[in-house]
Length: 122
Image (tube, rainbow, N blue to C red; front, top):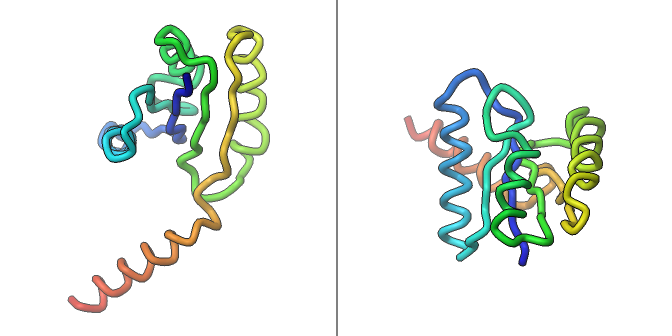
């Protein structure tokens, strides 16, 4: 079984973390996914280790981490691979994969156009 984790930076502002959790919930509901968690790099819980453990306990043997980051910055280049390697050593029967960040996805231009149009209407 495959589990999905939406992985965000995390914030000291609770409402920012709650917004990411709501996106995760909507993605799970609209996609029909049942093994889904939100995880944060720092400043919020659960972290990636805990999210992987939760999914593994529910039977996931493959986990796909979806970075909720705009670009491939230092956290995705340095921190995430290190954390994934550590977790892989703990959950040896679980394969962990990481997708690309949001940058480069064609929908981002549409989002910006929508925001610009909305601002220009006011």
